[in-house]
Length: 151
Image (cartoon, rainbow, N blue to C red; front, top):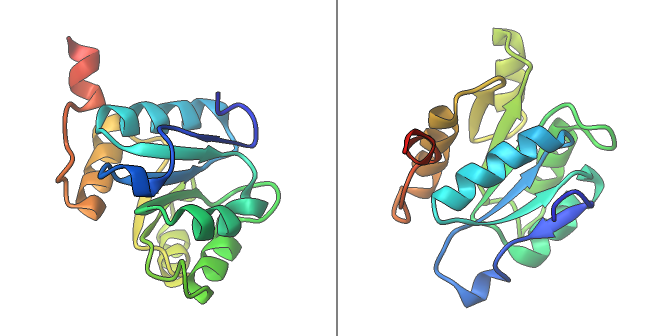
């Protein structure tokens, strides 16, 4: 599955109306949570552990949203978002920072780097879903992962 450098669910963007989300996270548990939430919301997704290929993947697949950790081993999320915002093919893709950096100064620097939203770890699955729905307008909503866990 997505335990390799990247995993793509349900094919490429042009074959579906479902939103495509690129999630870049180096911790497997966090990737699992994000992928579970995305699947429950009816999204297709690409999961990546290596941030060095993020810009290339974003250019090729044109995701509707990028969820990007900040503290990544190869390229940090701040550098990745700067590169994304400089590329014509990726500059308009919304990018959500998903990070443990929680101070006001950190949040200000992160948002100043070009991120569209900020989600602080640890987060509740409802918070993750709310950010995804806000950015993607919620047109695709099926069941929330939180509701599925309650059943």
